[in-house]
Image 1 (tube, helix red, strand yellow):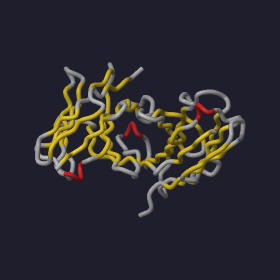
Image 2 (tube, rainbow over the protein chains, first blue to last red):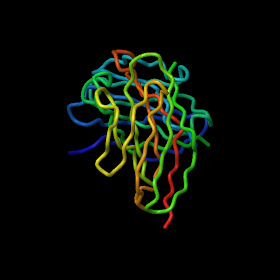
Image 3 (cartoon, each protein chain N blue to C red):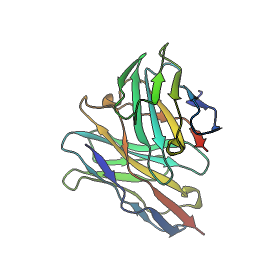
Length: 116
Length: 115
């Protein structure tokens, strides 16, 4: 079946602009995660949704970052007033239920964001 | 807070040689442990995971990892590597008992298999 998809695959923007990154999880998966991977680093957790609600947003770096999942499926990560330090690959993952059940997180291909 | 240390950032080996990629974690609670692989120009894929039970877990392509609670380690091994194993490997940990759902990753180890 189809895996996790993310659009766009690449996004180049200018400092100060607003961007939206989209994630389409595997059908039927209730849990959705956003991570950020900077060059030479492993993925870092940003936010986790269970259904429509953000159950853990402790990884969002500041209030310029916001994510929604209004219908419990597709999610959008929104970044306001982008800064050069926001440049990274943004990864989305989904799992059937909870990771604490041992469910596997399946990752999408990522969106490479470049802020000039 | 949990952390994961991958001791080697790069590991070059020759084809058919054995390899060990090291991973240590810090946690005082029950944990789940994972190895993910990222092939060139592809997304992260789960290679294997430890949840409970037997401390030795295996993947379908010949990798294995052993959970060692006393040493807080989860090293990945393969007795004979192929060119196609060239990739970046990430070790990750999550809470195993209803804690945070997030994965905490190490910085990754780039495995390069040379002919």
